[in-house]
Length: 520
Image 1 (cartoon, rainbow, N blue to C red):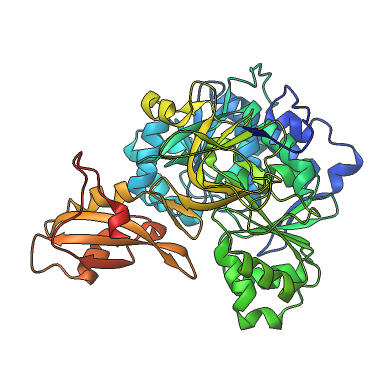
Image 2: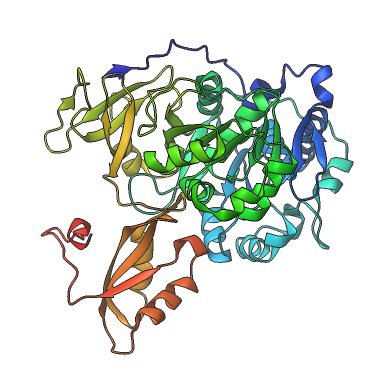
């Protein structure tokens, strides 16, 4: 086991809302908190806090508070931050829903989480309303933030001007957010993160990532994903920086916003780094305001990171984490010069170990060079409470000593910098989004043309990995195109199968487990 090289930090015993906003000064109230990248509309810190408090009051007036779950289904727009912090301030739990999900997938999360209210936006309303209605959520409990006839809007709820409720919670046990993750095994599960988990991760990371009040941060990574939620939204707000939102990534608009809004700090995933390193459009824009870019959500190739640094004249950083860690456990501190092939050292108040997957023995840090490879285990105050209604998966993931088994294969250097080199778990990372092979396999087996199937991730320069299906035909009618179309009609775009190979039999172990390594 090795400790963080950083000194421990104090973790306040408080709620997320109070951590971020209780000390908001009078002069800070006029500082821009959020800018809508498309329109340029500004929300100040004072407006953000006042509106979040008013929304908390409106939710409380509808009987929502501790013990209730509210679903938030929205891309990155300023209203997301108001809705998110209003839900948390009311004492309810926010379950954030991927903006790319279809109605069936949204419905599954609403049912599993027990959400009794849904907040969405008009572009996503058709699938959101279909899912919520099918799950018994009444029209007056489906809030369309930007307005839609037949449903309350954010403006209407804020217009009630109700005071925020008095809420008493235990930050250590009260669930603040419940994002869904496939974790180290199988199907998506509700990750129960307490106020203390989220507060701890902000406190652990804020000085290392070092966003400052004069920074202008582009917010393209989705806030509904834990990386965007903690690293982008909460850390930037804690530091009184200005967030400029983008509802979806589109390269020309991304570059325009960096140029026109004089963006200084960008948080990205590796596919965006590919564009920044290689695309000719980059040369048509003035990106000189940028000083730092941090990559996360999937491993960044060092040569790619260096290419971005040289082309843009920025400092490139990398971090590692997962939803179950709120999410950060390792990060290259700004200005540290830690090797970019790594995700940096363990953050404060955490311990790491690398464990041999064959013997279970701990692998020590080397005196020089890099260690042998093993599974990364971590322990700290940011480790989730548990998975919702899944004791078996929780026990598989967090051991009796409190170490979370990440399912990722890592190596470390003498300074404790961790590099993720492979995945013990089977998850595919498509453009930073998690795709569970088991989910696609189960779906493929419902096709009358498919006798058996296995899905693996295969490397792809642009996406990182793409889902590839190995299929045993049940019918000669099955073609690669028909198999891909069958899946595409039933899942979110990022989950689509993008390559198909027909084989005579799926290789399996004696216990019936698919031998994916043989397919790879």
